[in-house]
Image (cartoon, rainbow, N blue to C red; front, side, top):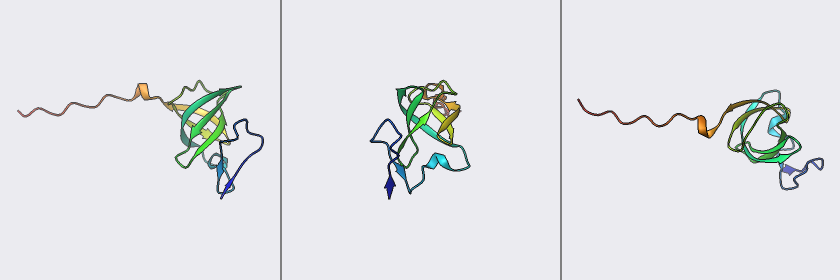
Length: 92
């Protein structure tokens, strides 16, 4: 079952199972899908999309951020920071 929070600015962003994944007592890594302005962002939780505050961090689209209670508290990484693939070893 999905529930909608009417205080959100994006009516297409839904919570799941009556409780948003970011409302638990644990911070969870999510991916920033879009920046909305007013220090808000839409993130992909792996189970759906939710709106969170990014007021405390400098997040960009594609970044993985750590979210607790609908507030991004750290940027864990961005696609540009991922290491390049290691080349295959050449036989000796």
